Image 1: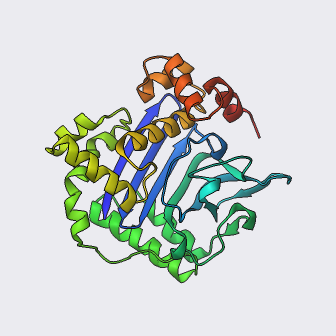
Image 2: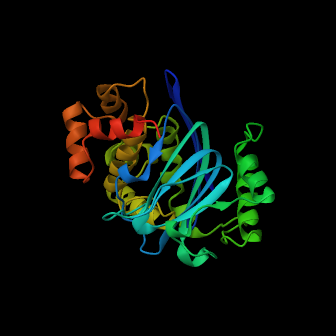
Length: 296
């Protein structure tokens, strides 16, 4: 299991993220302050067609928006499942949701629908987390679990709790397959980039960090995106989506100007950021900022 952590802060806003990768699934933990998330403004990403996203909210609030229906408000601890068209590859007026909280603690798991034991889709609403599931989620955010082995154990404990709750089945035993060894150097080279939230990396930099040829790096990253259900199907698309999704979250930070957000993400100007949003089919950054900072 690959495990990485990153921290970012600016003024009163901060973001702590944990990434756990196992063959066939990707788990990410988020602890944010002064930041919100709205799925309507996330850049769409190509993922395997059978992808779904399971969300577990440990602290904070969620607003669920269904077409032709009033917003359903919920609070932690709860969970829900978004289909591919509702999150990773949004198309048209699909159902959506937003997350807020001071702080907000949430877990997102991207997995194959055949590992899921409940109906996917936001129309099925929010479900309350059981005490056992809540305890397993809480353990992931326990700062005492600072060593990698401890974090891996906590992640596997959560997988077991999800299975016991009848929600999904995820691998709980170590996988020593050759597919992991073949891309380990790529994963290792991602460590410093992820730790610094550096989403402006490029293929040549990654190849240099991994000590591999550009051709081999490109091929292995493409395989890695499929194996771990990362957003995008190649390095360029992966980094583009990660940059835009991080930009969307930072636009909710009250202490950052639009120019600050562009600089943080690695765009040379606000014009370049606006062009990237337009190319992704998103509203202008200024409009996204207004929507994210509006009180609910």
